[in-house]
Length: 300
Image 1 (cartoon, one colour):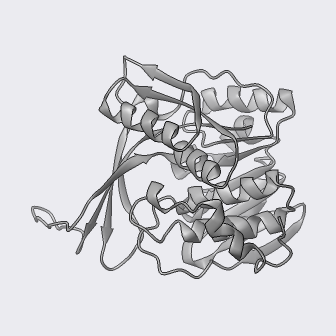
Image 2 (tube, helix red, strand yellow):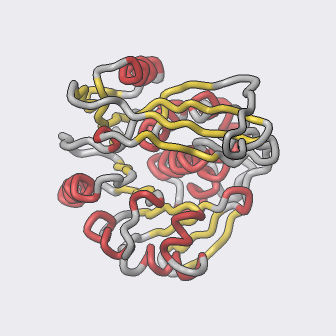
């Protein structure tokens, strides 16, 4: 079982011809509304690849919370660790996708449900989280360290304090630390320096920076490398980083080496850009398998 701990929400994605100016109205042709959130996305993407996965999250007893639970049931994600809290609202996001770029512009309606207050975690084959609440996340990673569970952390920009080393109590001992390009810029002035922070003060055994169309850069036990992006006609990048994390974790738990698993992550992350919205775009294992033979030494 893979345990994913973190956020579950509903994503509203709106394609627009352009981002409106102040006091300007633009019309959208279609709209996509699906359950989302970093943790939920990773859990669903893993389930579609064939992993047994449990989500630990906190939602409200409301319509959005019901959408989350229905999606988890449909995707065969274990939701026994999803707490329904009557004192909060399930948070939601709104993303604008303009015609000039598939890159999202996102607004997050933050609520206390962005990270679970408590979790009950046992032995697992892997753990993954995005530590939006550092104190609660530290308890989660402490538990994984005690149980000797390998774990990965998605260091979203919102997770990082002004002094990034201040989150070391959460990240220390992580098998893999993942940061996107925006988090990279908060960590250091260059990708190389950011990798040094991830694998140095923050204590990641393996460090990865995802850079969208520029692929990824990584450092694994002293070796630095780069993997280009998977070629795809991108429609919407929402969920691409979560797809990368899921592909990487899936491959690692299937016995792949780090570099091979990174290649699978890049593949799944690229495939997650093909459709509007994150949840509809995550591939199933049957879509991924034909590509595995093209990824260097990957043979799962």
